[in-house]
Amino acid sequence: MWKTFQRNLITGLFFLLPAIATIYVLQLVFSIIDNFLGPFITDVLRVLRIVRIEEGTIYLLGIYTPFTERLVGVGFIITILLVAAVGASKRKGNNEEAFHRVDSFFRKIPVVNYIYSSVDQLINAFTQEKTSFQKVVMIEYPRKGVYTLGFLTGETKGEVKRIADKNCLNVFLPTTPNPTSGWLVVVPAEDVKVLQMSVEQGLKFIISGGVVVPPEKARLLKKDAVNNNTNDKSFKEMVVRVGKHRNNH
Image 1: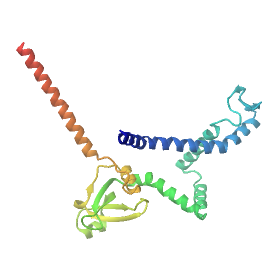
Image 2: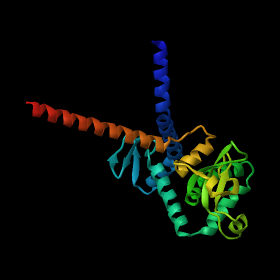
Image 3: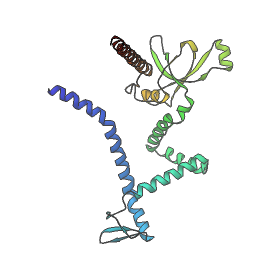
Image 4: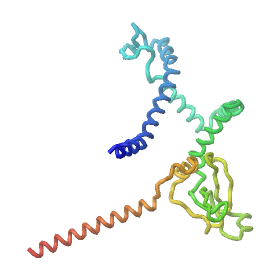
């Protein structure tokens, strides 16, 4: 009884942990941003006479609010709008020199440059690299019997194909846990095994060192097909039995 309860508790904890961690991080980020900018924005709105404080209560445009120290959420909203504005400017290609200066500034500070570069590489792994990687593949490397996951980047052409004198594929083999570094190998097409997992799933598998294992699509599809065929067969048998029963009567 106690062991069953322990198993149920652990299973439930593992199932709920990602959601709990996500909610905790969101709450933490909201609190940090809002506590940092909230009082400042509230003071600015007070100077502009948009809000007023009477007897420890904040009134927004003359309307009563339950807040006493700051307008909760206003700092977070302003931050979101500012980040969106920076993103819009970046996408349009405006102020590229300013963006370059900010990037160079963080990369020149000791210790900070390591954190900044690591986060930047991790973000690139989930954004830019996914567009250049076509499929997740597996090859025997560095020796027979040992397999390495990589990403198909294209078909080998030009001088490399001419010297190889066979159809080859360009495969990028990333390192763990930083998939932005790695090396390129040219592999004969018949030696490349294409996997069903998506590029994003492959990146998660590599970054986690094999801890995050994506589900096998082919097996799941096959299982669903078998279940559908079984259900169809059972339905047909039931129809036949009903027909026979009616004929007998």
